[in-house]
Figure 1 (cartoon, one colour):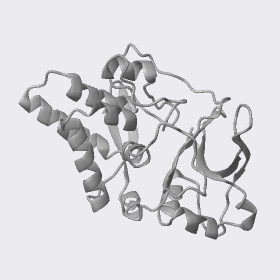
Figure 2: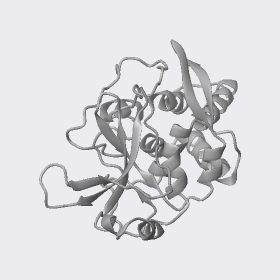
Figure 3: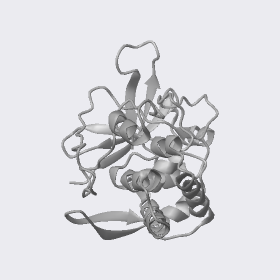
Figure 4: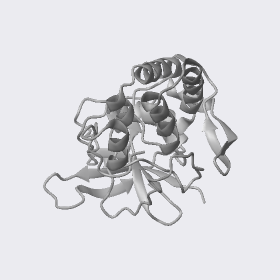
Length: 261
């Protein structure tokens, strides 16, 4: 079954024990459809954080943090970052086509970016540069999707011949067109070590995600190095230990608080 997406606001209580995000509430805006991740991204990316607060009802003004709550078919949930001030994102979202790809043992439907607008081109140029220069700290901090990071790992850690390296870069560029992968770049490229969702009084554009303590999330078999199929309820990610194995002992670039999307 498909996931359900809600734009939510909450109050951050730094003195609270356990989950510090209180009074969570779904934000509804008359005349605006916010039923999918793309709906939400297209709406929020068109404005600044301050403009967003000017648009929402006064009853939400006490919400110091904004995030995207993703509810799975089994009732468990996790949170994704909200993207602001990225106006070129709308044309990228409009270009998305659902296509079927074969991964390991079956076909899966992905959302593929088909445009080459400046936002996408510049994003790929930065990622390509990080890959070619084998900047593991940055790459492992931005991408934790198993399929994509496995490709990165093959390039930065493998003894590749020139032709193989070229082929891997082509494959990595195509993989970067998957919206979920591209979105990780937007939300994680400037991420700090502190993974709290950002307060509205802070002057930055991307709100970080937080994983609630009671979230139930499945992990994949760490022994497998092959591609795995991805569907709505089976997304796979690396954890600290697995990333350290790839980057080298003691080289975990960020402290993960849970599954990052």
